[in-house]
Image (tube, rainbow, N blue to C red):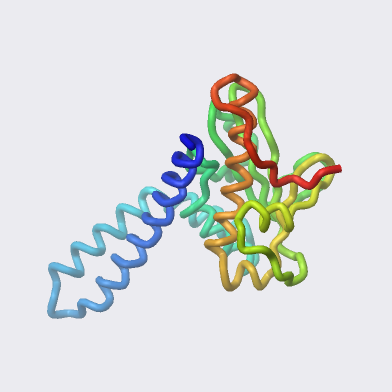
Length: 210
């Protein structure tokens, strides 16, 4: 229960930040020329969010070099989580080393023997887990339950779990895609915590058996 509470709090924090940013920009635009105070106040709010997320947002979308991947990269930068921490975009992959506890993500970085659209590295005291994301799967009708849905779209390549989204998934429900990525990362994060006797093992595993 404590784990689920942390995961939901982290995800909601990121979603709330994105909504606050969008709302501030929208209010500034709607205020018009006659309400200068509202415009200035909301521009300041938007600027604070850009200072917090700006570098990751711009660098990740630029490196994606594709409108579809850039869209998902933007949502990952704003909403991505591993259930405990905000995930950190790493432009120069591997240059800064791995954190003692946290998750890094990158665009088109090699993991094992393939290069997925996105890769997440969940780290804990020298141990880590990989999670890859691809965006070329066919359209499918998937279950509503989050765990079942993530498991249905996961395959394993070279020992790495890979979440496969269709272009339609990303175009119409990018935020839901990030929720699924964050859920999978949270399972792997809890698995690492269990290795270090900090949390109990995850109750659910999204990876397919066999």
